[in-house]
Image 1 (spheres, rainbow, N blue to C red):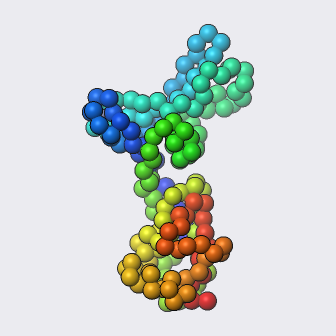
Image 2 (tube, rainbow, N blue to C red):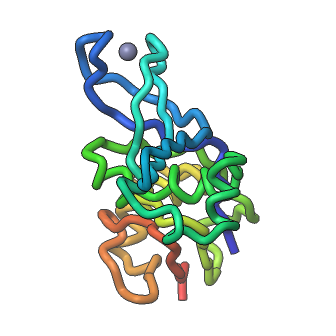
Image 3 (cartoon, rainbow, N blue to C red):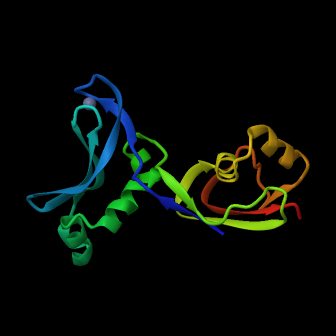
Length: 180
Ligand SMILES: [Zn+2]
């Protein structure tokens, strides 16, 4: 089994007002909470890698504080790492905020093997990751694009469920069978 380990939170891409063009922003790993009258706003803060300009990704907008579980609110106040990661790894959340998302840096934990061996390989990811399965396999097993394509054409790599192994993304995981 291979497990994908995230090494850094993904950068987001958006127009930076100060830089005057589209830039990469890094997650500051901090939430910002604003309590106004009876409403609460919560954001996750990002910073432009070039000029430090901040941008806030909206988590909650004008909600009643009572509608949030007290423990959850405390996690936002303490910039809880797990909660930060949960939002920063949530592409749907970031896209709803109107920004592009880059792939995070990651490493693959697990044993390498020869692509000629008979192996059933389960690849797992805690988060939905849009990593191409083809690049993941080629990079980890050190095989060329040509060799990889040939293995697919020859039916030597299959997936459960059956997917297009040239194009499909990992998401939460996949099971591959080599040389069945
Ligand atoms: Zn900037």
